[in-house]
Length: 250
Ligand SMILES: [Fe+2]
Image (cartoon, rainbow, N blue to C red):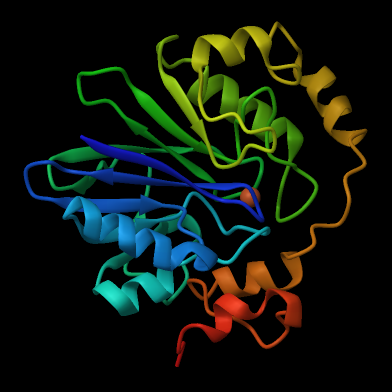
């Protein structure tokens, strides 16, 4: 498999490029509008054709690059089927593997950060990899106080869908804010201070209730924009408009 972990530094979002070496088809998991040009260059350098973009959820901290990438490459846009916007081409759901050439991604319904969140498991006979989005991060997890989030639901998703994976499964999160790239299921089960080391669901809910996080700075335009596959809404503030102005989004 061809694999690249790419970062958008303003929102500390990881975009994952997975390519099939036989067909040269690729998927981008959680692309960001701000880094579409970088992604296009990487695809070209690797001789890959973008077959589709794939979202873990409707993000609140950045606009997806899905719509612009579709305009530039003709790729399909995939979202969780449970809350698939009308602009998307493909709805994914647990139980139905998502094919990219010879690669198979297994969607895992993992609500809690949002009610429609999905992680994606790649298990191709080598070491398994799970792209955990915002439900499980390195020593952390996504917040549960916005967008249909629910702490108890997130706890159950992590314990019932992710912590049951083989210990050696590599965990590639949707974000990291401390420059870390990858973890493993064993490591998160042991070390995650919120979800691992025997923390109960009650303890987890209390931890999340007491986080007292600031209001997400891009949520007011990011969520409505992502519900349109990454179309820039009129209320994008001037300081964030550059990637919107770079592309004709007619
Ligand atoms: Fe998120």
